[in-house]
Image 1 (tube, each protein chain N blue to C red):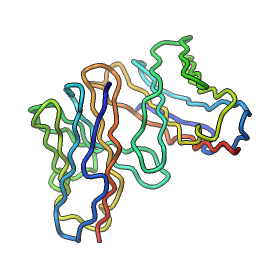
Image 2 (cartoon, rainbow over the protein chains, first blue to last red):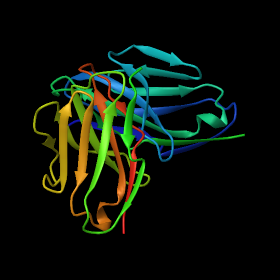
Image 3 (cartoon, rainbow over the protein chains, first blue to last red):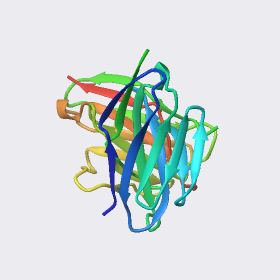
Image 4 (cartoon, rainbow over the protein chains, first blue to last red):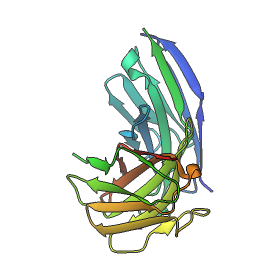
Length: 112
Length: 114
């Protein structure tokens, strides 16, 4: 059974204080690992897809990396508008269609 | 690109009535659509997967007769909560995939059953 564990559950940062969120996963064969951002009362917003170990992707202050066991979402010099819940999900190769298994998320709060 | 809409965004209904939620892919054809339920401070729980023109595949523990899903076209899927009760109150989110790996999510529908 595919499993995704995210840590920490919650993270408070001061504006400008860089940090990383962790996503550990177990899957029989990884097709892709996905990062989403979710604001309260809204649907998840797609951020990145990573397909193979060693891959990195960047978007503004966010950088996602992938190893064979985990992914990190690095946040550089965060701003209050980066406050949100960040969700990690995996998709297995044997999965039909594009079914995802989600982690519980990390709730990030960036204080001004 | 890859925009998904949901309607309504909020709905309040009385216990025993049925509610229909629409999910549309606005700028792409969605071969597969997914329906999720999310409780406060929890992650997304997949309810069912639907392919255009086929019957939906429900996750274990999800009542097929209570949560009716129709995926009649490549841009529209509907979720009908039949005979709703207060315990069905939740945040319902749909997503759509165009045959690639990514899922694009709608903004969600807050259902409150009184």
